[in-house]
Amino acid sequence: MKKHIVFKKPEAMTDAVTHYCAGCGHGIIHRLLSEVIDELGVREKTIGVAPVGCAVIAYDYWNFDVTEAAHGRTPAVATGIKRALPTRVVFTYQGDGDLAAIGTAEIIHAANRGENITVIFVNNGVYGMTGGQMAPTTTVGQATATTRKGRAVKRDGFPLKISEMIALLPGARFLERTSVHSPKEILKTKRAFKKAFEIQIKGEGFSMVEVLSMCPTYWGLSSVDSCKRIEQEVTKAYPLKVLKG
Amino acid sequence: MTAKPRKTPQRRKKERKNAKRILITGNEACGEGAIQAGCKFYAGYPITPQNELTAYMSKRMDEVGGVFIQAESELAAISMVFGASVTGARAITSSSSPGISLKQEGISYLAGCELPAVIVNIMRGGPGLGNIGPSQADYFQATKGGGHGDYHTVVLAPASCQEMFDFTRCAFDIADRYRTPVMMLGDGILGQMMEPITITHGRRTTDDGRRTKKWALTGCKGRKPNKIRSLLLKEGELEEFNRKLEKKYDLIRKKEVRFEKYRTEDAGVILVAYGTSSRIARACVNTLREKKIKAGLFRPKTLWPFPYEALKSLDKGKTRFLVIEMSAGQMLEDAMLAVEDKKRVHFHGRTGGGVPTEEEIAEKVLSFKA
Image (cartoon, rainbow over all chains, first blue to last red; front, side, top):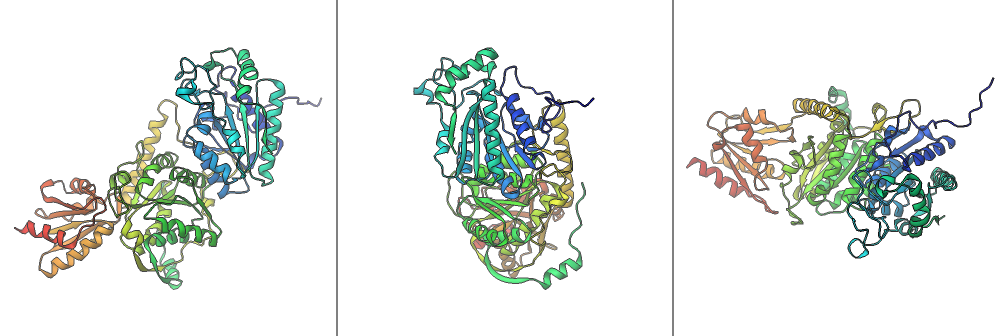
């Protein structure tokens, strides 16, 4: 009898067991990315650039060519790869520290040059790998390891709306902010990924998807409550919408 | 890992036949050396005194269909080179002292990921913003690390515009041969002076050398995916990798030492200098010889691996060594390591953009005789 596959591990993922915490968004986002790569049939010409952050060993989870990058320099590494091999599909996968703190210059200039790459920006408002310190995208009042009493504007500044800033650049072709806190938003994220990669494949320029993600461990919330926090709190500072294109 | 053979006589003959002679700055000669090595990727940021190199690459890369990126910073540029190198492409970046400080992180990553690349440092006065005068005060940074971790960068020290061309070309071969970053250590004088050079056309510029780089990231079609990373978290894994790097560096120490001996056979005083300092020292040797003083010059062409044994072999027991640098004394320490008898190793240096003169050096040598 012929088997009808209704669900399987994407070809673009390895069999490795991931190290992510329960309730973390990375697992979902890795999967969505991999499904899109499979569906577009580009696994064999994809080159990914992994960040420094919780997803630093993402190259163990993806079944295609991947390189590491120095913290924040990810878009610069991707620029080098794409300019050297323009026919490959090149993406970066970055957290809020990698992209919006130490890598602020690199992301802005890669977008400004209109580099034909795709950026997956995972925004969970905290530095997971190093123990839950404040991120540029930590919301006002959010408690972290370096903002025990909650982020205070006077000392710590405002949550950085980096995607809104990048959307101002003529070199940026497509920018969308999505989330993975509910099945509906997960599907939207996948559609955004697909659109972003299609734009790269068509050679139309710089594409980026910011994905609001959960960090139950350092938000001090249950997995379910973390999803609620995104819906009720985080989206107020970071509204879900197409920012450009 | 074995070293590939040097050029065959037939190849040398062919190159000489197609050679061209032009007047060019050291900076541009360096850039042309990269072009003739088949390098099609340059990323850099303007900084004096190497701006001629950046500008030259923007022109030449256009002409050969290569990539030129004026990056947002030296930090970004070295990571762009990292990215290009990851795909197997020959890639180069250039800067001057403060910008090279910025690149140290990237160089450590290149070494840790075993990626070939060429980094050009046209040294200027420091520390800090310093000045735009020539300097050799980045020797420690270049040869003793610079970036974090147990690694070495192969360091080449040209002393003429011709060597700016030749050594840069050669740097890519060394980088590819050992999968390691290679640094060209010049200075402001070398970069901006003009001399006639012979351009030999080497590797065809369409040859990207990628075919032999099985480790490169080119898209996993027809093979298992490749991974480029320096993060090794499993127990013992990083130590094992460091031992592997050590073996590589031992091989480079054995095979890639380069130096020049000038009138050293009967010399009682050996001047030890590289780069621009060696040109002044060479002139001084000739002047001293005219005065019947038996002086010679030992000129390292590789600063790492440093030619310890070759230098030591010049020691006849009472030989004096005078190290000349545009620094407060950095190569001096390696010379002392080589000779071992510190009392007979002397130093004359100028720093902060100052340049040693023949007269100063001669005066120092004459003081030995007293």
